[in-house]
Length: 217
Image (tube, rainbow, N blue to C red; front, side):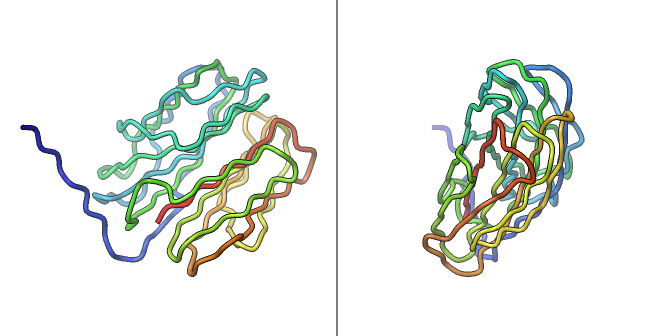
């Protein structure tokens, strides 16, 4: 009978660090980002990758790997002029590695923001939220020590500003392929919250836009 190792998660306080961001302006279906920083190795390290594409035909992430590990696709939203996805995998070894993003449709560019999480109780998200309507905002409910990660993209160049009572802190805000903007934000919540807001405003006109929010604890 085959046996498999049991993953034991720590009772220590959870941690989350923004570790890297990469962009490719190549026209491809399958992207490979090498030398991606994964942070400090740990048997329970969860690497979360926020993905944004650029294509007028939309498309979704068909599959992905993080450090050679098949990624779980938590959120996968097809949007005209660039889609958005949120993926993760337990990657216990290596300070750097390769992230592959395989789209269902040819893309004109892809960008990723990467977070390293440790000391969580489960790799299954405690909650998720998606918004593709203006203004980009959602209400979330969470427990203490929940790690909340959010990212947003638009098919215009400018800048995002994160707001809302959840108090997420921006980690990245960058243009990719000269025509799109992708931004991400994160916070480890010190206390529980019910009906707490996460919002992001944009300096220009939103076009082909979307927001993902995910929580781990």
